[in-house]
Amino acid sequence: MVTVQVALESEIVCSCGSELERCNISVNEATLIALFIFTERALGARSPWKTYLDSLPQSGSGALFFGTDELHLLEATPLAKATEAKQRQLSKQYDCCADILHDWCRKQGVDSCLYSFEVYKWAHFVVLSRAISLASFDGAAENMSSAVHQGCDRALLPALDMFNHSGSPSARWVVENDQSVSVQVCPKAAKSSPAVDIDGIAHVELCFSYGKKPNTEWLYEYGFVPKDNENGAWPYLIEPVGSPKLISVKRMWMQELGLSPRAMLENPSGQSDKHYISRETLLALCLEVLDDAPSSCCSNIIGAVAPAFPYFSINGDMLVDDDSKLLSVPGLAKHALGQCISRLEDTRHTMLSNIKASADVNLSVRDYLVSEAELLSRIITKLQSCAGECSFPDCT
Image (cartoon, rainbow, N blue to C red; front, side, top):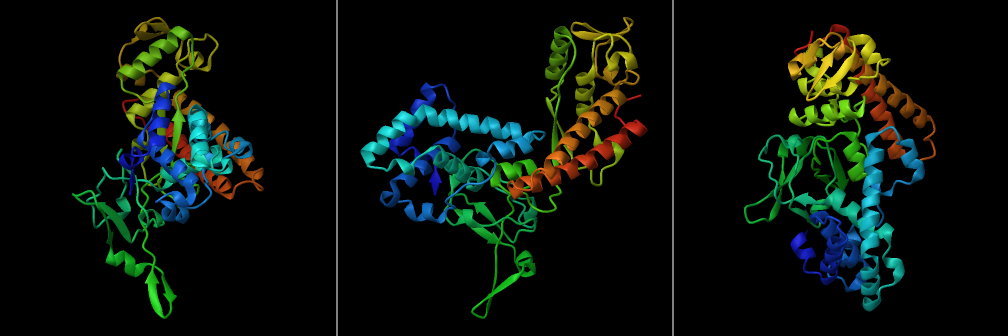
């Protein structure tokens, strides 16, 4: 298997890692393993890993390879910013190591066409889409669909990384105590899987579950969106408004209350209005819309807002000095939900427009836009229902 320990046995990987640190660029296991795959592929037949490297897809897909057209279509989605940030990060890494890699390739007699930024992205795509965590273990043997393998001890395992994904997996991988990896078959699931006849013998494809992920992660990591994914979630970014002094108070509250600047709005299927919006999400939304501009919509609804560090005041006579009081400000929660809905509707409108323009672009991008527009529609409907019934925790 290819682990970071294997990667660090390579002199060129160590040299690149040191150069990245000298450039103040963080280095993690994924980066080192990708550098190893990148340089071993350049060696071609001289690499002891040639057989494995030849078995891998020779081109990448997914977010790392999106161009201007795809990113323009994804402009309203969380995937666009994540993709642009990752591409910038990889570009900085490659530029930092370019001279070292060039000298190494010259000494190794490697043709310049065998190493490039595109190949470097391919190596990262391989790690992103195929590496497993040796630090993880899913003990739910009977519930294979719940297998989500996480951790930081990354590894590429030849053959194991060729298993396809299924929402109803017929097998799973397990890390044994000696760090070896074995495959366990679920007989019941395997029997119900479609069989393929080869030379008169029925064969069943064994599939793993890659985990429960929202569509953004699927397209980012694997380059496709599974059909009927029930684990959809939309990361709503909290964007505070108001004067610099008011925003500083809001940020202090966010930190003190442990609130995330990104509220995850999950697929509302089967959830009641009362339990859909968590108290933490509602607090973040309320903080977001507090506005001390006299002519703001917020001021018209709840009254004059003013920062009274480290608290807020409403109309000069109501001191908001804890989170319960914030949620009890008349009209604030409903206003916060209304602003959230408005932003989501604008985003959905942009996505629907881009769907119409995506006919000649990557099919997976179109599938993603369609699925996320449908998800937003369900979320908006649920939020409208919540706002209509004022079904908020600790809210009047």
